[in-house]
Length: 231
View 1 (cartoon, rainbow, N blue to C red):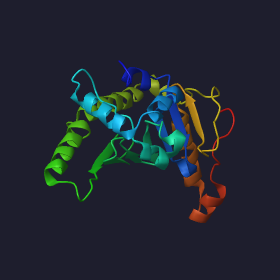
View 2 (view 1 turned 45 degrees about the vertical axis):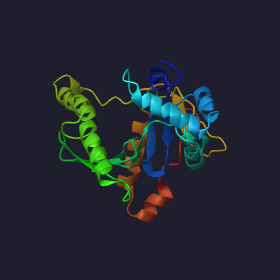
View 3 (view 1 turned 90 degrees about the vertical axis):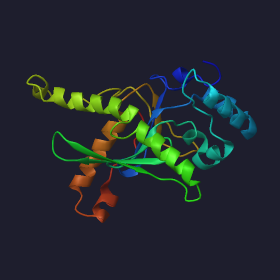
View 4 (view 1 turned 120 degrees about the vertical axis):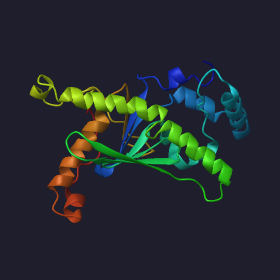
């Protein structure tokens, strides 16, 4: 609870999908405009003090506000985005900024996952070790979030192999026809909505383009334009 209420900021009814060309996308929670306006009213010193108090608070996880340079780099829309970027088709970027995940299909019912940690060369060695250990405990074979996510993916795949499930087509219609693509001076094409499958449909739409193209030149000439209007 309080200024940085995780339950409110990460609420399933407050989500954003940002569309990029050739199938790239960012999807996940979004900081509401009103909350971001509160952050923008704070100095970096105030934000750092807030972050320190949050990390010392044992009652819950910390979600420190981004410093002012983040808005300069990401823009007014990007700074509000709390989702995970996906580089088409299978490179996933963790929002902690130090990890990349490469997902490699190994058949119809198996996926190989590689995790990479990137740290500044100038970072002290003891801090590097701490960060690597933290990453391994978060995402990795025994990571807290990896185990939680992995069970969902594994059980969903197993369920899809059932007699009844295999008689149905894969349904990816969540949110279909209910949302409008927003564009403004930021030039970012996006949907701000509840949890949806807009990002998944965008990935597969572009997957068709990549498979159909005979060459890079063909793909550049015939790839799907960024979504517009009601989708």
